[in-house]
Length: 390
Image (tube, rainbow, N blue to C red; front, side):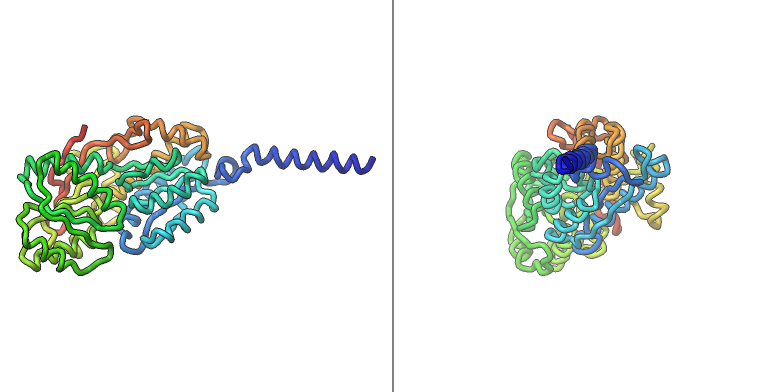
């Protein structure tokens, strides 16, 4: 008889344990119940070659969290940022991502780069944690799974629009194309620029390959000096872009460079100095005094007040919007469980952010307009033109 009683007691205890798991104890439902805060991870490099992207994204996130918490938080809880620094290193990014997941973040904002975003997405998708990149513009990102999002202007939209402008407004007919081999962002952007250049009748007279962290481009520029072209399409990052242009000036070449937001960073003109004057960089956000109002104006003024009057760039602005979008989705879903609020996030329509209006299409890709083409002038980025997109 006693054995039966003990057996019944054991079964009852097991049933209670299973019920507890089913009511929110699962590792797949971080912050779904309990706790005083909702944790959002920051994935980016605060050090290393891509530090500018990460530092600025984090600034925007911190501003958003501050604003949301002052207004009462989300679902009665405060937002908390769990910071990581992968040092601009892909393998370390995997470790940082995994660590954040064990810390029970409801979502991760990052990475600002395409390659590391893909690395993190391969971890977040099976772990059922939402990943929202505030900078990855290359191809093959959201295809990884239904927990993966981004809020940035896509290269597939921006590069063709910029190519049209370079051709029709600036008269470019021949270009040199420079790709950073092994860099997912650069290779992806080159693959988008090539058909766009062909569509608008622009001839690629020379192609050059470089490597990330290279500092000597004398051989590549010497090869270009034998060609006649109107400008350089550079699809890599700002450090290499600055040094490449310095080598061009050293060898007497006067053409300017145009590229994507991988070139966006004060390091471009700090390192490149006069060699990058006239260089053009496109992005999904820029401080445009002629078209700044409402929440965008408030964001810019607050950022400048906190950052010695410096202007925010797209990374800070998109980091800000990313947190606001996550918070809004959690409120609509009445849950901070990513398995629940990701459905509300996927249905985002006409979200009014500081970078403009954002809608996710059926593939969870952001629909955004316009393209801001910026030019380096007197060691700063200024808006050269604003290009609407379809």
